[in-house]
Length: 366
Image (cartoon, rainbow, N blue to C red; front, side, top):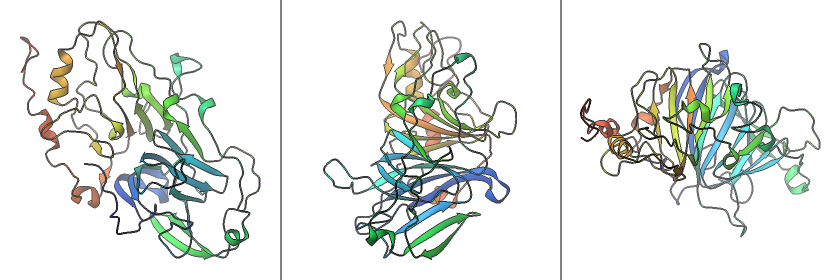
């Protein structure tokens, strides 16, 4: 099920609402990743904060990639400010001080809750994937990434007010009191900076004949450093609205497979075309997640499989029922105690394949 939202009787900010799901390696050796979810209902700064003083934070361990799922985020950094809505994502580089509040609506009111996903890399930085034979443009184009303009705190009541700065260092949190706001940078230059991207602008490349290409064809950003050639420390992959393969006798969803990579999936809205089961285990809901560890067999649930093998694929079909994503890594990850024991864990997940029967060579009907 989806990550639970805080009770309306509690006050939880972004940092307090982060839960670790899985990870690998150690930031002290600059190796590995961390995968998290967050859910909060209060700001880190301002009138709606959950603490007596404003909180700000920075991460010495690595870069954060943040994917909002419910409600947008208003993020202030030393470099400038960003509004990051669901269907967008942002990256906060290692060492940059930032503050996360719930984004206000056009009417000036904040949503009551915010929820989303986070990927942390302990080595290197996110970059665009090499396009190879795709050519000079496609997938996520560099021109569509946005960075903040310089902004500093000019209000005397804020800039000279004591605050708390929290540092993530070696997988531990350290706090100190600061006599003034950290947002006093009036100008900057260079390219070490936070940025955001609108996933609607992704230029999907897909099969126009048959079958389902490897999901790496939908890579938005990658972080180099996999354990062998052709793998990555981390990939951020999306499954956007797109035209599906059109040849007769093709299979549009992902095939059944085992992978040399760890696959963590989340759903921002709608549904995922390979997990549509309406009854029993295996369903996939916005705000939820799935994990297929290295060399664990998986694929479409039985309901999705039988529905798709019967489809007439002679005419183009546009899939626009949802937006799913994947954090993929060559690292073998350990699952956290929280993930193993939370009430939302679906212990009967593998039941979604129970109705698959051997149909070769006679038919594709159960």
